[in-house]
Structure formats: C-alpha cells, structure tokens
Amino acid sequence: MTLPPHAGRPGTGANGTGSIDGRAGRTGTAAPVTRAIPEATVARLAVYLRMLGELAEQGADTVSSEELATVSGVNSAKLRKDLSYIGSYGIRGVGYEVRSLHHQIERTLGLDEQQAVAVVGIGNLGHALAGYGGFGGRGFPVTALFDIDPDLVGIHINGILVEHVRDIPRVCRERGVTIGLVATPGPAAQSVCDQLVAAGVRCILNFAPVVLQVPPQVEVRKVDLAVELQVLAFHVARRREAEAAGALEGSAAPVAALPTNGSGPTGGHEAVNGTAVS
Figure 1 (cartoon, rainbow, N blue to C red):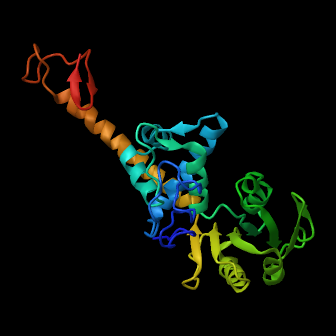
Figure 2 (cartoon, helix red, strand yellow; figure 1 turned 180 degrees about the horizontal axis):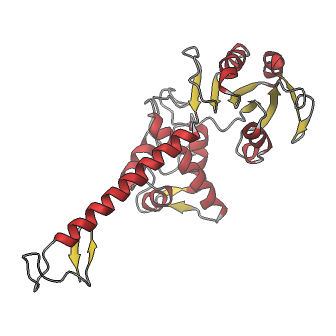
C-alpha cells in the first residue's frame, strides 16, 4: 500500500485545496484523500496518466469513465474505484476534465516535481537507458551515469559524463538523485545498491538478475524481462490448451438434423466457444 505524497492533510483534496484541480469552488469537489493506495492502483494510475496525456494532445476537454477505461484496458467500475482513492469522482453527465485529472494524478504520483535519475552499469541495457530521451520529458531526467569499465568511464552519453562507481555517493548527493537504475551484472548489483542507499537514494529500479537487500525505507522495483517472457509463455500455452479443448468439444457436440450416434458426417462445421455451429 502506498500513501500519495500530498495525502493526509485534513480537510483537503489531493492538491491540498479541497477541490479536484486546486481551484476552490469548482464543480466536482474532491473528497479528503487519506486512504492508502494499493500498489496495483498506483500502477493503473500511471496508465491513466499516459492515456490522459494523449487525450489532451488530441484536444479533448472531457472524458467519460467508460471512454478512459476502454483506452486504458480496464473496466469502468475499476477505474472509478481507482480514481476514488485520489478523491476524484467526476461530474455526472460530463465525466472527468482531462487536464484537471491529469494534473491531479501527476501530483498523486509525485510527478509535479522532477525526479533526478542515476543509471549504474552502462552495458548494452544501461547504455540504452542512458540514451533514451523519453525519461526527461516525463519528469525523470537522467543526471548521472556510472560504470567501472575504463573504456566507458570518461565518455559522454547524451551530454552526461560516465563516472566511476566509487563516485556514486558524492555525485548522487551533489545532483540530488532520487531514483537509481541498477543495470549491472548480478554479482555487482548489491554493492552498487548499497552505495546508492548510502548516498540517500530511496527508490531503486533493479534490472539485475538478483534480489536486492535494502533497508525498510528504501523502495525497490524489479524488472526481469526473462520472467515476463516466461509469464507470457504460460499464457500462450494455456491459450493453446483452451483452443484445443474447444476444438475437441466442438467436434464431439451433437448437431441438429444430423445423426447423434457418432457415425454421421461432421465436415462443414466449426467450433465457436466450444459449440458446433454451421
């Protein structure tokens, strides 16, 4: 469970004013936001934020819960419940103001302030992360790069100097790094993590194939692409099993006006949801 950065102020909404978008007296006043937000909801809020950004770019002023839920890949009841955690209930017959809701979710996710990012491990993955320009545009500018390879230390990527990992504590403090991306080989990840924590970094995104040990006040998110592929492989296998079972059920199901003792023709029919149809 996660508490929103601006929650817990009695008598105020997520923006600290008691209204959805910070302007007192607007229709659709937000309820006080004091509840802890489930991690799954936090993840979906990030999706809603991206979709609202796209809607704003398209010139949309309002969006209904059904429309926002559809483009976000969830049902509207779940979306409304998620948004209730941040005190946003929309306006009956109108829906949600796109820019207002976008701003409110940004504040809830702590995106109203930039988060300085450090990437440690400038191999293939780390180099790609360091060179990706999309982070800065979303409030996550990469401000520090670290490695131990003498061929990498001293070069610039996107204008940022690659420094030695021994300088992590000093550089991270000087540049106010709040998020560390660990993209090192597994054996080096824990040591790097310890240095980031010692530098005051309290949020770490771990791409290394290990489980990092951190103090209770440090948040770690692990990204394991191999595990994600294995999960997808599971769903592929299950889908094939379901399709095969459906085909078997369809071929064995009785069809009107045909013999039902199994000796009649079955050609010219296909299974739809496990039911034989012409």
